[in-house]
Length: 197
Image 1 (cartoon, one colour):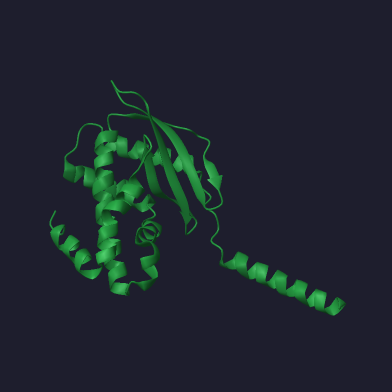
Image 2 (image 1 turned 90 degrees about the vertical axis):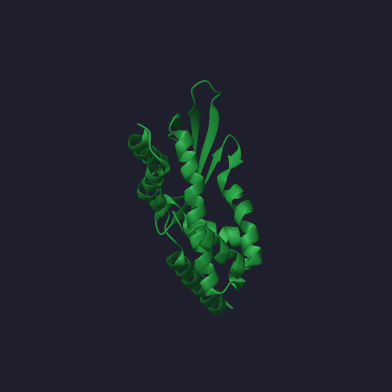
């Protein structure tokens, strides 16, 4: 009986170490600092007024690297993800990247007028973090902002922005979900319609 208990304990310890080895390490950079730095760089570049093309470029250069595209794409696909062939997964990823760029590009345009006050105390729970902020817009009531991040490959990545209670990720999912349900043809049509600048 004693030998069985020791053997069982050794198996449990071995499995625990395996699970820890396979588990992604949490991101180390403070999420609040990441968000504040990203906002500062974006505002610095578009504060004087920029065209839509310039704003798209700023988005690509300053924001895209901090977005959790892989996690967001799987979340949008939901239970359909496992059944999607590889080519449709790739198409959906392209659609998400384009759609997110367009949606967040609009947000950036509007955000230039606001002073965003970041709460330095992030709420971190395992691989997820929430950074709270307040957007002060001239001649408008203050708006609550929440930046939702997940840890991907040891770095914090932005997965959602809630502005005055409205989730951009949920909005994007609602807009793209019909494409996922209609599968290949709908994804191909979206990409064809949005391939030109």
